[in-house]
Image (tube, rainbow, N blue to C red; front, side, top):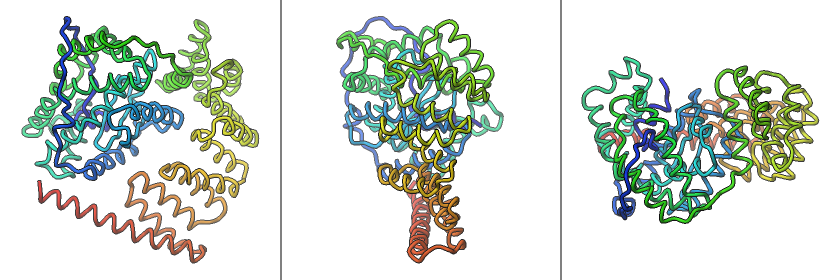
Length: 487
C-alpha cells in the first residue's frame, strides 16, 4: 500500500491533476468561505489528526529524508505562508518520494510535495503556485471543514479510513474491498464538498503568490501544461477521483484573474535550480540517473546538469567523477549552500572526515543557520572522534531549533560515543517525541532508567519526562474514547 496515495485521496484537497481549456468568462468574486464557515473541529483536534498522519508518513519508505530538499521546501513554503491571509499560522512542508505531479495538504498545516512535482516544475513560480494553492486550503479552513464533515466517525476510525481509501490507488483487491458501501459514498460526498473550495484556493493562492513576489503567471502556466499533457491521471485514477470539481469554471476564472494582474518575471533562485536537479538525481536506479545526467552535461553543461551528475555519481560511489563535477560548479551557483553541502558530502564519502569538519565549519560561517550543513558538521565531528565538541555544537543548535528531531538523534549518537548511555536514551526519546512516537519515547526512557551511571539531576529529568509522557498518552487515549462517544 502506498501510504501517501491513501492520504491524498482521503484527507487532502488535491491540486488539479487534469485540466480542460475553457473559453473566456469574467472572474467571479467568490465568497471568502473560510471567514463564514467555521467548524466544530478545534485546532487541537485538527493538529492531533495531522500529527498522527505525519507519524505514519515518517515511518513510510516513501518519506524522503533529504535535509537539503526539505530545507528548501520549508523556506519556500514559509515565504508563501508569510504572504498568505494567515501569516502567523504554523506549517510544515515535506518531500514525498512519488513521481506523480502532485502536492497535498493535511489537517494541522502539514503540506506534502511530491518529488514528481519538483522535477516537472519549469520554474520556481510554478512550484510556488502549487504550494500557494495548498496553503490556501489550510488558511481558508477547507481542511478542517472536510475533516469535520466526517465527524460521524471517531478520530481513530477516520484515520483508518484515510489509510484504506487511497490504498485503492494501488488497485489491490484488499484496498478495493475497503471502499464498498457507505465508505465509498462518504468519499463521494467529500469530493462534492470541495468544489467551491478548489476555486477559492485558486483565487487566494494567486494573491499569495503575487504578494510573496513570485510570478502569478506561474500558476497559470502550470494549469496549461497539465492540460497539454492530456489529463495525466484520468485513465489511472480510481472512479471516485476521475471527475475533478469545476474544471471548466476554474480554468476560466484563473485566466481572467491573470489578465487583471501585472506581469512579473521572477528569476529562479540557484537553490531551486539545484534542488530540482538533486530530486531528479534520485529518480530511478542510480546507474540510470548517471546515464541521464551524463547526457545532459554533453548537451547542456549547465550548473544544474553538473550538480545532478555529482549527486548521481555519489549514489553509485563514483567519487572521482563527483569530484570532477564539483570543480565545474562555479560562478553564482558556487556560493549556494547546496554546493557547500556537496563539498562536505564528497569529503565524507572519500574518507576525509577531518577536512569535512573544516569545510562544514567554513560553510556555516557563510551560511549561518543552514541546517543541512549543521547536521553534516556534527556528523563530521563524530566521525573524527570529537563527540564532546559535537555535543556542545548540538546543544547550541538545539537552542535555535528546539523542534528539530535530527539534532536530538545526533545528540544520542554523541552521548553514546562518550559512554553516556542514559543520556543517549534520553536524547533518543526526545527525538521520538518530536516525531509523535510517544510509545517508543516511553520505551527509551525506561531503558534510560535501567542504564544507570547517570547523575541525580539527569535521572530526575528522565523520571519527570517519563511521567509527563505517560500522562500525555493517557490523555490522548481518553480523548479518542471521548470522540467515539460524541461521534
